Image (cartoon, rainbow, N blue to C red; front, side, top):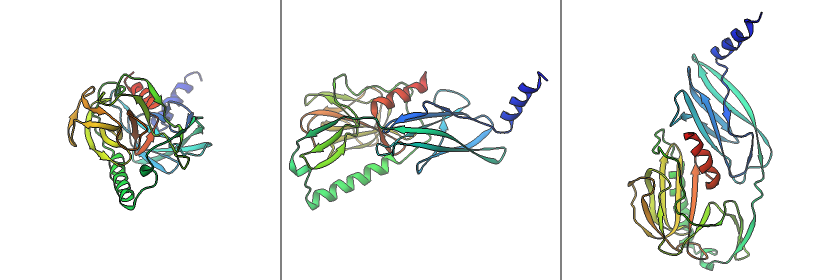
Length: 284
């Protein structure tokens, strides 16, 4: 009888009982969850969460593993979720699930005063802002299989973070938003470098973000650099980690010069600080 247990375990695995490894079972809104799975003998790995449907990708650094970066949107309701995942084993689809709890990140609040023209928009400015938003979301929702980076992600400058991700903001006592990235203290003209290897997908002046550069790192990961006074790259340029993207400034909707740094994962904006920790764990 002592030989039956290991034989049973082997048989269970052989018949397609695959279980993912999850970085956490309790996460904050705005955070990223890492899910990995052994991909030997299975295919078409997919995950569904709160209306989001994503395919697993080949792990960039480890054999026989697939991974998925699950972005938890800022406005995701705080509760427990059933996360479904599926795969095909010997032509048969297997559908399974695990539980994930989303809790409030307890982000702080702040009030800001900006140029009224950035709050009460003219018809022309409104159309421009809407066009730029659609253009950007088309980029962020493009997910390639190719991974473009090999090293850990780094901060775009060595400076104090003056405003963290998720801060609840009230502009001119009227407009309520949340801070979609982290702000680095930077005088106008401070060099901004690429967080990692990638390809430039956006390099232009935009209504809210001012001088903007967006770098595609492959597999649905994008880093964004806003309010720049000078842009030194163009769309389609390949950049390496540490390459100069441009100089900091005070363009767009700002209260003063700084660098706003954002991260999009699979079409959703997430906490840059927490994301860097999660994505860099892939290379551990």
